[in-house]
Image (cartoon, rainbow, N blue to C red; front, side, top):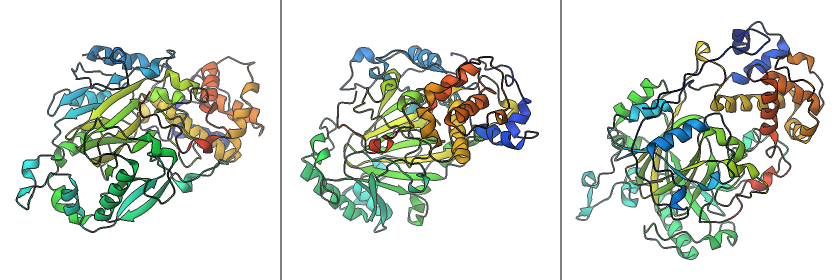
Length: 505
């Protein structure tokens, strides 16, 4: 086993006592806000503990096998070397690393959960996919999680179905859009009965020239992506229904292995797994790259689904939308067809890959970017989300992990916009080249001394806030990385992912 690196270090570099910075006590009013940039640090410290696990490598049709790391030791070493270190390899975005895979009941599962790295459990027993337990209908087996079985579960209830002009189904939240960016809703939410959903899906698949079979080798025809008309039969449909408020599923819920899941929740001090969604969509439907702020147990119930993942330290190359954009926490760059001129840092990202099949369970840790694509028509997935544990003050050590700094970034961005207005970070980005480079002492200075409302003054305020956790030069670089390529006038044009390259990278 490769043991964790014990994270240790001094308290804040200078300035107020560490406890005051963390809790906000004894801090002048103007500085209390800056102390809250760690307000939602729900994270583990010292989480790098890699188990020696053997795992198969799926044959990816679009990437040379030489690019796939197929040694567990290489996987562990690669992840550890990535910790808090941006990649410099300009071809790394083409080198897929396989997600480790274990069997149900493996003694490696607790170790991988503690390590906080994604992994796949083959033959999961959290939710049954065993057809022998399915109901008999008309003298034959009703496959679990097939259309008939799901129709039996939901009946004629109206379910949430999203419609998109292209195969991309980006999440968005209209009331979170407070920035000065153009925004056009990329999907339309509808409510449909299951029988109507299946009918509409069949129409669209036929019109697009796609096979209704479950043959994974039949790739989606991307040619229809730019020819669809709003409300027409060439749009894509994706059912995404919350399982809350479905008493008709009580009998099904009772068959799930809740003790196994709740034991994990209790051991790792997660919140209750009370956010559950069932997902079922057309072949090729894609959820663009994004990261979650909750732990995710993702169960593949029927068919196959591809997933690409990126370490939290790759956020620089993913170019997340501004915090005050409706698509917050999502990548502007499209990994399927990346624009490397507009998003040059994507070259340095390090993707991981898994092809999930029925009965697989994927652990998606907080902060890991993920990009899903339905590989087989009408594949079915169920998610369990849990809030991450609250970190205690006495457990926090410096230097902060990259995942912790991502939360610092979000809180700092929100704080600046509250104090200086929704356009403030857009203006700050334009002032990056005028940042003060005269001081590199590393000493944290009370931000009240940088009260200038000019972009340069606010930039200096941000740097000095970060100096409580980073050396000054690192803080200045971090602020630049935080803004460059993200707070731009063209943010709105990337809401609908551009390019229809089905061959991945």
